[in-house]
Amino acid sequence: MNIILKGKKPVLDLPYFGRQSRFFDFFDKCITPLMSEGGIYAETNSGSNSNIFMFAKKGYKVIVNDASLYSNAIAKAVLSNEIPENRKLNNKEFDKYKSSYIDRAALFAGLIDMYGYNPIVPKTIDKKLEEKINNYRAHLNDIAKQGIRAYKIYNDDLFDYLKKLKEENIKVDVMFMDFAWPWRDGTKTDEYDTTVNVFSKIINGDCLNIKIWDKSNVIDNVIKAINEAKKVSKYVLLSNQSSNYPTPEILEVALLKNGIAYEERHTMLTDAEYEDNLGKDSFFREYLYVIRGNLD
Ligand SMILES: C[S@@+](CC[C@H](N)C(=O)[O-])C[C@H]1O[C@@H](n2cnc3c(N)ncnc32)[C@H](O)[C@@H]1O
Image 1 (cartoon, protein in one colour):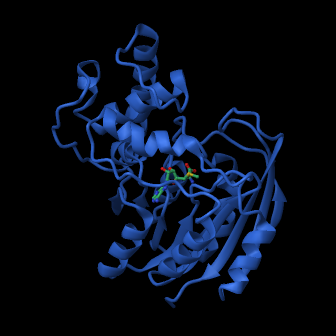
Image 2 (tube, rainbow, N blue to C red; image 1 turned 180 degrees about the horizontal axis):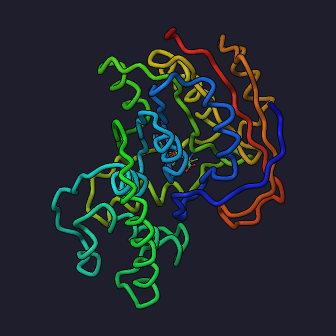
Image 3 (cartoon, rainbow, N blue to C red; image 1 turned 90 degrees about the horizontal axis):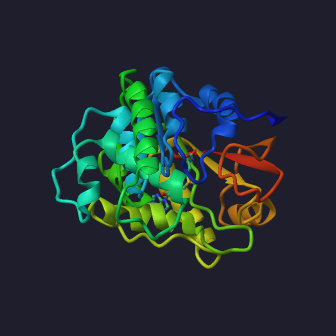
């Protein structure tokens, strides 16, 4: 399938760098035919959780993973009934946001809304920030009330996560992978350094100290991730975008050279809006590769 569609706002709507909501209708069209009834839909990098929420709402069992505590807070806020461990926060001002995942996710969303992906986080919360946090909290509460639940939620480096699924003998219909791809010039996306590594310090959480991929290691990591994902999946879906390195040509040659022949390549073209507001390109193209996994 190669289509042009206009983006829509997602149901679960928080600021998140790299959120793919423009493509959700397209993903639905490509992924649903691959799913068995009530089957398992999983992601390696769930990010905003807006995509996985859509599939959970459709009635599939979903498995969430992301290395970022912001992403994990969103997942636990809207897809679980869990309450966070009661840890002391580093900063007294932020203390009142520690006791629920909804509060944590709302705090992170408010910080991004006010300050972008700035790794220097303020020590105090002024009225404007508090208002933003309250709005995000209300939105998260509305979503949580829908009672949609995940089958499992992980907060791991994706290789550890894939290993765990294998050890737990989990069989996935579709494993969707939208990595923290480097920019087209090969540099890493610093925004994820903030949400993965810096934000964990705000809530005194365990920092995974994840190294965000760049040109030097992205292709090796992608090949390794596909091969690990194939072991637990019927289908592995690789999602890449026109703003990233490697470009489709470079990626497709690397896949073939490494013995990975995709069955289909879907694309969707859209205008750049809603997502990061950075105005980097006026258009945006998604490439979605369907790769057959090792499971029948
Ligand atoms: C492109 S974003 C995913 C966006 C998501 N598809 C959405 O629509 O919101 C990439 C995600 O990978 C996460 N990430 C970066 N390195 C990771 C790693 N080694 N293991 C797991 N997640 C990682 C980042 O925290 C980020 O949320």
